[in-house]
Image (tube, rainbow, N blue to C red; front, side, top):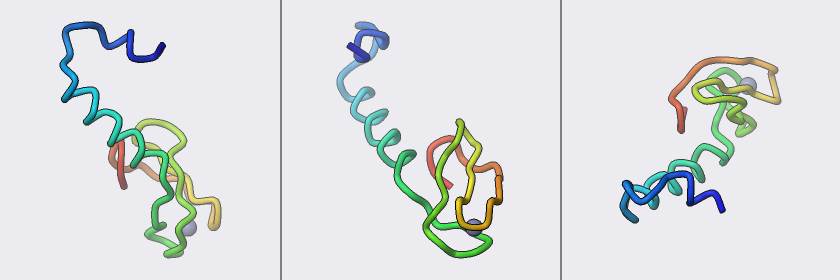
Length: 63
Ligand SMILES: [Zn+2]
């Protein structure tokens, strides 16, 4: 029950926004170095391109 950790202090709207960001964070992103869509988030703000093995920092949820 992951929703429980947010507690009753947060409304449904905030939870929905988190959902959207999390989905976007899990999606693949375009690498600024090799232009391939093989960039995945390895940690908050840290991204790694599986094509050119480049690791770089970016936004917490999107590049
Ligand atoms: Zn790359």
